[in-house]
Image (tube, rainbow, N blue to C red; front, side, top):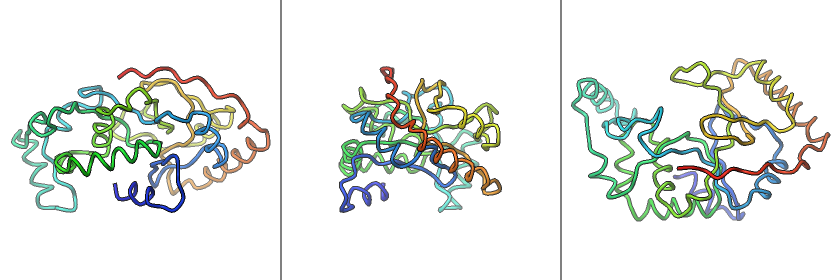
Length: 240
């Protein structure tokens, strides 16, 4: 929320904000990203589902979990959770809102970000409740937007993530992933979040910075080939 407010207060009137993390990297140039968002103006790119959903059980929202910056409470809440003594009922705290969850990464319009900031300011109880949940960044923003009038605009997010290992964390990207990115003019995915083009990817390891050099070369080649002039794909209607 601090980053969103900082970006909205910037002197430049940004039309979209993109939330990325330290192990993410773009698959296309800044020019291409701008052109993509211009072609898809009015759409919101965030993957979310109404809870409960696969990978997002209600226990994520109903189990008290203190953040790691409060170590004593953090470890105590984890121990109590294992014993079944850290339960809450979200319905008493969300005050009529339906819980939503999804992947943390998103690309949202200025209007959507302003809506989140205003809603958070008017409903501080929501932030206090989600603060003490596990991975709140996968539920807090999603719950605000999932209950908003912006819902018809939602499309899958623009992040490539490989979950084929079916573990608790996505796979680290490797040479085979780079070959796949290079072989496509537009990097396209079709998974549980629906079909669509992706503009960013994760997770990259600090031990494989050579992969980022290859992506930089790929981006330059695609720019020279003019693939940014290809027509945009039609986005399917989202189902929530």
